[in-house]
Length: 247
Image (cartoon, rainbow, N blue to C red; front, side):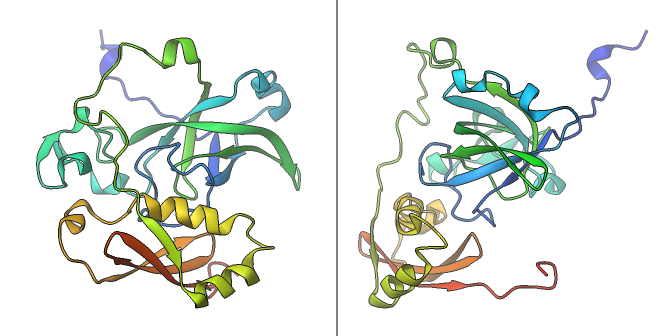
C-alpha cells in the first residue's frame, strides 16, 4: 500500500495578486508594517465570487496563503541567513520565514476591504500586505483573533519590530514630482515614507558607511533614494518607460 503522506499534491491558484510592489527589493519583511500598501487579489477559481466570500465582512483581516513564485526555481536550503541575525549567521529554514523552503509557500495576514468587480472579474481588495505583483494565491482563510493571536507566544529571534525607522525626506525635485503624480497615485508620499522607513537595504549594508544611490519600483514608478546619516533622502520619482510586454 502506498503511503498517502508521500503522495504529491497539486494545487491550482485560486487568485493572483495585483500589487504596487513590482520587485522583491523594498517589500517589507512582514505584513502590516506598511499600512499604505494597497492591493487586490484577482479571483481565478470557478464559482460565483459573491458566494465564495459571503459573510467575509464579519472578519476584518484574512490569511493569504501564496507561492513564492519569484524564487521557487532557485530551490530550497536547509540553512538560510536570517535578516534578524544580521544577514551573516545561518539558521534552520523552519526557524525562519525565508522564501527558500522545501515547498515555496508563504502566508500573510492582511486587512481586506471587500469585493469589487472590474470588466466582469472579481477582486478582493487588501491593504498592509507584503506581496509581490502577480503572486499566485492558493488559499484565503479568515483571521480569528482569539485563536490566531496567542498571548503566551514569544519569539526570541524576532521579539519586536526592528527599531531602525528612518526619517524620510523628499528633495525639492521629488516634492514637485509628488505633486504632479498625486491625482494618479493617492497617498503616494505616505506609501514611499512607510516603505523606506523600514530601511529595505540588505542587513550587512546597515552596519557600514553607505553612499550608494538605490532604486525601487512601486507601481510603474522608479524611486531613487540615498541614506544620509540616519535619514533617507528621496532624490527623484520618475515614470518607468513602458516595455513591449506592457503594451
